[in-house]
View 1: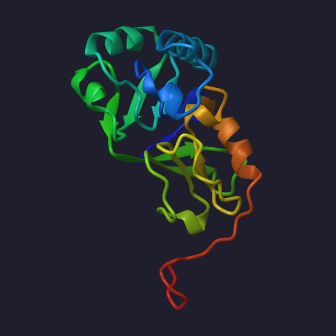
View 2: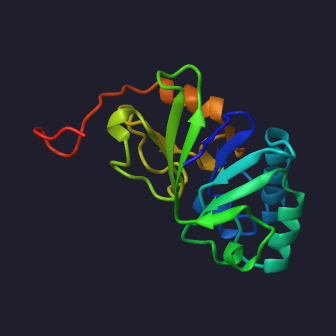
Length: 196
């Protein structure tokens, strides 16, 4: 797994571009799907540069394929999509819209502040109670729950969705700041007598 730079990478989830009902379901402060989409596009492009990379944790577009493609053309950066449960539109968009689409991804990020100089991040649409290398300090970012899942202050994991972060993607440094506020107790879930 290659080690990437922390510069110019962002994380987000659950935009539901084009989905009118999500405004009610997630109590979003928008009067129309047009207002929601336009706000999200503006916020995205203020946070993300044209050469940046966004790791989107699923449920990016719903509905009309043509509308989704037009919105994608307006969004800055390269998008790596972790497939959610509402990504049929994204799957149908074809090559060029995304760097890749996967169900799960592990990321290694260069970070000079850490012993060993690398932060591992596990990316999935769904929250996990345990994930690869959690006992060694890896992080997990998820979406799906739209802020409804109670955060665990003792787990290095949180909901990266737009409903939790001012309706905008967040940078690696923002993720790092959130994780720094959490308690961390390394527990090896393989069993008391096993060492890995």
